[in-house]
Image (tube, rainbow, N blue to C red):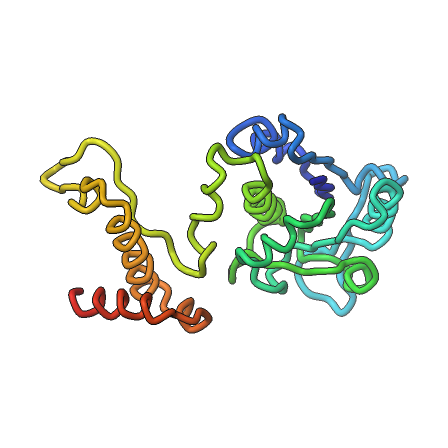
Length: 243
């Protein structure tokens, strides 16, 4: 998959390119990243890409012309790429959207700054607006990295184990179950006995029950959007009864 990122601060992407799971995926050519700075597409002396908003108010807005020139340069290479603007006004980004985007061959991600972007650019060029949460950041670079990280983890070959991404939180509509590793006892806290039993059916049952119970406790709204089987409902009822 190809990612084309429009950003005024391309240097912020350095650690992402060189480290971690996503860095390795980029180095192995499972995904590629191209960074585009709108300042490279203006001809004024100060490389100005923003201006005051009409109607007054605080802050500055990114201008249409530099962004349009940048998009056109990218479109000359990838004419069918989906254009995504990261903004607090966007649709909430989630696992299902990530799975849909992971099926694309290329994406253009706009990391806006200041008070945002001239709405005429959004109307003309942006296909989807996405938000990573109900809060405001200094710019769109962190949201772009969140979206890229989430999508790259879903690409075949990125993770060491083929089941890793399918067993993540939200992949089944539930939060993940608790995890434990060595030592077996630490500070008088023991690993649940079922995980040491070697009974794979019992372990799977315990993990599903814990995932259901954790979701019920921490994110109950997720259960409203997921139909539980009779078996799952039984496990959840048992968890609630013993909590």
